[in-house]
Amino acid sequence: MINKISQDIETALPRSSHDRKISLIRGMRSRLTGFGFARSGAGATSIEYALIAALVALGSLAGLIALGTTVQGLFQTVEEETTAAVSPETR
Image (cartoon, rainbow, N blue to C red; front, side, top):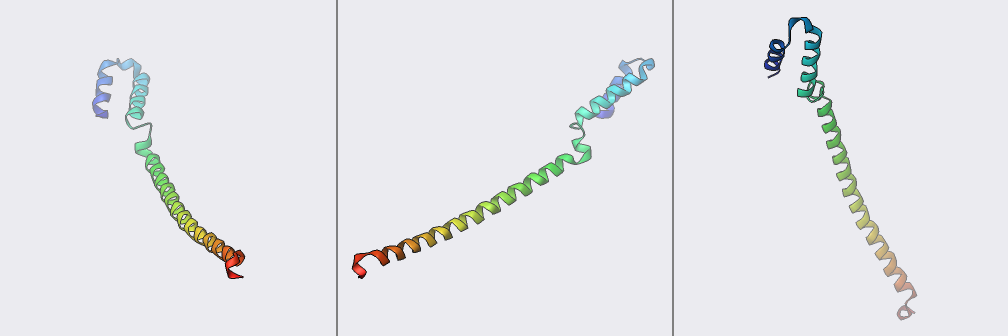
């Protein structure tokens, strides 16, 4: 596709404007390749980092949920022990 565009530009412009022609071809190539992301691999690296961040977030969430359940059970035990210690029925 890029070669076809290059050929179209070459036939449309006169030979004396060689620099302008090269500039146009480079500009169109950069637009067609996503401003260089397709060639450089920067887009793939960004996606990898996003996936790693999502995995870390899910792991943190799972850990916090497990910790919350444990802490809730601990507070419930403390409440039951405190209630039993101060209730008049045990005296």
